[in-house]
Length: 583
Ligand code: ARG
Image (cartoon, rainbow, N blue to C red; front, side, top):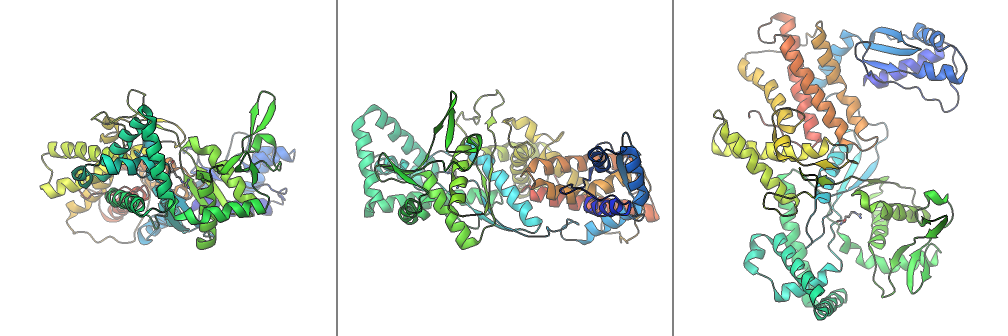
């Protein structure tokens, strides 16, 4: 990619100019903030001059003089107090356009050192309502997994479903007394949630019901055959239905190792932690306290109260012998590292679980794991009124409901268009647009901020939306349909117009963007890039005739259209969004 190439040449230029870089100084090259002066920029001469008490402009001049990459850059200039600006040459741009067209990965280079990365995302809880947090996790996790794979990492996706827990006491009691078999067949998740809610309400009204539920839970935990069978059936029915939803969304998991998978590992794990002195007994429970190794403000086992630091240990076994969420997560880490040789584990889970993960990661480090653990947190989704997000029917939303409603709304929009093809194709287009719109509304947001959910906005053909981007793709394809196969593209690519060069450099920057997404795990960088690409393409299309031109000009422009379509499709694909040839 250009940024890496410039970095290489710039490093050489510093050396050739006789500047020796201080320990730990890294040369910076970034996309230009103002493209009037160049395509890339570097502030390194300036920063370095300051450190070494030199004149920044003079140093920049020296480096510029030593910079030798004529085939890559048509212009190197100095701006302000010593910024270096680089303009990529039309020849290098043309070469890149051809690489994008020839390469399966659109010219995006692979990482130097591929890592094995486990991505833990979605993870709904069985027989409990799926909430918007699970929707965000599902889309963000899927996108990051796709991007990581695309740049050459080994990625393992694992759906750590909440398939074990105290809710099963209530579910089993409800299953035995309230279950509607017909409703279960129709929509198992919905029926199980109904039963759960009803029993939950009953336990609040009548302590006797709570006792019955606790009894059912104990029986399940002790391996009672009937209760085990009911539990298994709940898990099976739910996963079956979930897999259908994931299927519609093109989301795949390599594994579904739910919490229950680790049940047998929990007892021995706690014993080991006790033996190794990582955990301690406290009031009959087993907990992990601070080991005092980090500053109090960085220590997840301490909390500030007034002017004092008080312990907040992680409980890993309750006094009644029950295990907790943290225990399961520690067992899960052991498994992922031992079985899968994970170098990194990414947890795509909402911000409220921040403390939990800090404690789990700290405990894992004390257990000797050097794996890189990352909690990829996110905020919440609000309804258009700024309150909790609800569907048309007024219920709190799960993934299923959102997707169904989006597809329904997209279908209505497709039906309004008279040009739309037959029924089956309309359905297909509605699924692509509806699913894509919901995903894009999510992925175009900074994951850490709350965002407002608006059907109108996400399904609009104007603005930063999936329909707009899919439509941009459709427009690139329409050109080739008009040609009706009557074109033989050659390798002749000569970029002369500003709009052509602007489009080519945008296309080239797909490479940087794909890698940048993983720096802070931010899919919105990719969404923003694709939106800019679509806009740049539209400007190009307005400024430059494609079909009415001739010779090399026409060929060049067609290559640009083809490359734009290819990058849009690949980029949307990384967001998990499909394209359609017409809409
Ligand atoms: N099931 C959990 C929840 O709904 C999320 C699990 C996330 N993954 C994990 N390894 N803890 O909150």
